[in-house]
Amino acid sequence: MFYKPEEGHGLPHNPFSAIISPRPIGWISTRGKDGVDNLAPYSFFNAVAYEPPQVMFASTSDKHDRHMGKDSVANIDETGVFCVNIVEFSARNAMNATSGSHAAGVDEFEQAGIKNAPCETIDCARVADAPAALECRLSQIIRLEGAENYMVLGQVTGIHMRDDCLVDGVFDVTTYQPLARLGYRDYAKISALFSINRPDE
Image (cartoon, rainbow, N blue to C red):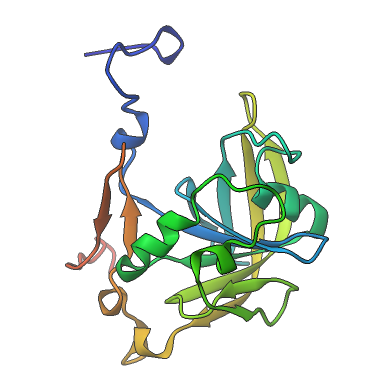
């Protein structure tokens, strides 16, 4: 099968996100200029550079009561900071609860019963018991093609790692099983690893 996106695929559901999978989930926490915390998951998320460490996520939907599409992007535009919380398999239901459409001013930490903790380098809350959390300062927001598509780039200014995830000096993902987004309503947990040396190692 071949299709051009602008002409449609003719399938019951869009296959695009299922093809590009698995994708890590950035559980993005922000704080509005009104002091209200926000927490929402984004699966268009990844690291983009080592030195200095930088990450990105993209928001791809509209919200009638906020500028720039969603609460997360609007808050970041106003405050210049955000935190990326890493999602583990055991937090799947809590993460899903924060994906709902809530009015501006709703605290998703409180609404979903998620414990938060303060960040160290930015004025923002983080998920207290996440395996890791990346405190970020905004580098730029890029308007993408489409109605309400925005890419947010940030530089990591502080990194939290949960103590049990450090094993023999290595951040060990098998201790918490990362949650990954597939297509449609499908997710996966990572529970098995293998290593391959590069040809020049």
